[in-house]
Image (cartoon, rainbow, N blue to C red):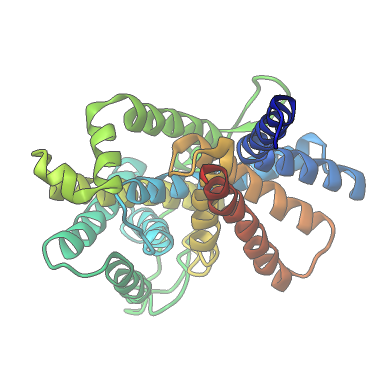
Length: 348
């Protein structure tokens, strides 16, 4: 027979196991991030320097902004594969407006934001009303934009002095105000350490966090993602919520494209190749942060920081570029293990 003391010991042991699982689920990925920083700091010279921090912040900014847009679609149970091509299209559009059409920075920014909103609206319409699966609809849009952004210049990057297909010379330039969005740094803590793009990321992350967590619209988006049918029976305009999620994603991707154009000072046709993979990785890694097990703005921001630290560390270690995607994939698998395998075990 099992005595009362034995039962108590078994219960205490089970309690300790559950507590350990909870700690691993909630803080395991943050510990992994801290360990990664410590590893790179010990393995490379200058990783903890202000210059390295600036590079990390700059890479985090654009990736994080795009990932926040992906997060909005994940909240409603969707997915957006077109964000990288939207960002590149916005970058090319900004360059075309200022360099080829010789217009001001304000018109360039407005054009980019309109592109993002229109693409998001089309994606939402295809998914909600045409019932095209989200992966297929956004994948088709990705290929469409990749081709469309190359047509005006016949596949060439846009820069001042380039010869256009009709033989004319592009004489416009990027305005200094526009370039400051991608190049200016604030002197808050250390001189020239905090780029404008990082401030924009922080502001957007706080806005989308507050929007999703503390507004009725945001909570209803979570409801749609959790159980679309139940939300519909409750009277929620499910179609509108899903379309708005893709519009948000498109606008955020366009903002990322604007910052990329401002950083480069040209319309580089190949500069957005890795944006999709890095942003999706950041958004999915966010599921593992603090055991959220759901898309969330804070986790996405931490995921973007993780990707930035990882890429900067690998670069400073002179790791071959073709190994970086493999490493990112491995990290993403680990994050998903923290998110789903451990959390599901803890629920048993």
